[in-house]
Image (cartoon, rainbow, N blue to C red):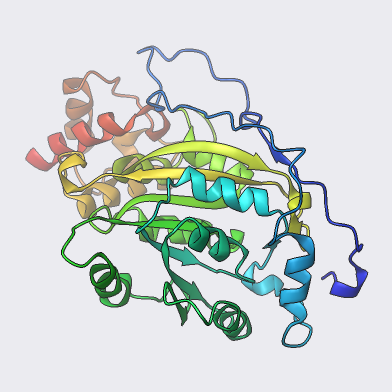
Length: 342
C-alpha cells in the first residue's frame, strides 16, 4: 500500500481515454448469423487530456485524507480514490444528473464525486462502509441539507427499506425515479450490479466506474466467446448497457494494476423484461453454464429428458447439439418457455 507521504507533490496528468474498449477480434459468423450483442453502441468520449486540475483533484484528496489524521486506503475495501475532478464531472454527465435528481452514491470516499453531484444540483444518499470515510464526508459537507451519509455495507444494505422512503420524501408527490452514480470499489462490482439492475422501479439509470475489463465484458459480449457468461444474460435481461469511456489507472490513488471504465445501464421496468419468470429462468441459465462445454441436452437433464430438450431446441430453430454459448438471450427465453410446457 502506498503511503500518502510517498506521493509526488505534483498532480497527475488528467487522462480520460476516449478510445473504444479493448476486446478481441469478433468471431466468425455463427451458422445462424446472429450474435448476442444487440448492437450495443460504444460511445467515444471527448478528450480531456488538457483539462486543468479541479477543486477535487490530487491536492484536495490528500488534504481530505489527512484532515482527521492519516488514513491509508484499505486494499480490503477496494479503496482507490479519484484524483481527477474532470473524470468525476464526466461520470456525472454520463448519468444526465440535473437539478432535483436524487442519486444513490456507493463508496463516496473523500467526497470528490459527491461534490460533483451536489454541484449538478442533485440530492445525494451516500452509502459508505468505512467508518472513517463516512465521518470525513459528513464533516466535509456538513452545511448542506442535500446529502445523507449512511455507514453501511451496500451488499447488506436494504435499499427498498431505507433509500426508497428518502427518495419519495425528496421527490414529494412526483414519481421520478432516482439514479445511481458511483466510483465503485472494483472488488464488489459484479455483486452490486446484480443488486441494482433488477430495481427498474426505483432507478432509471445506473452509472458505475468499474474495472475496464469488467465493463467491456458487461457491455458487449458476443455468443460463442469465452467471455460469454450468465452475467451477460442478466445484464441484458434487466437493462440496456453502454460502455462510456476508459479511465487510465494514473487517475487513482493508490494506483491500481488495471484501468477503470465508466459503464451505463439504462434500467428496464417489469413491462420490458422478457416474458419469463426470472427465478426459474436464471436457474435454468446457471445450470446450462455450469456445464458450459456440454451440450444442453446433457447439462439440463435434471429438468427434462434429453429427447425433450432436443425437441425443444429443434422447435425454436436451434441444432440439437447446441451448447449454452450458442444461445442469445432470446434463444434462452424461448427454450425456457418450451421446457416449461413439457
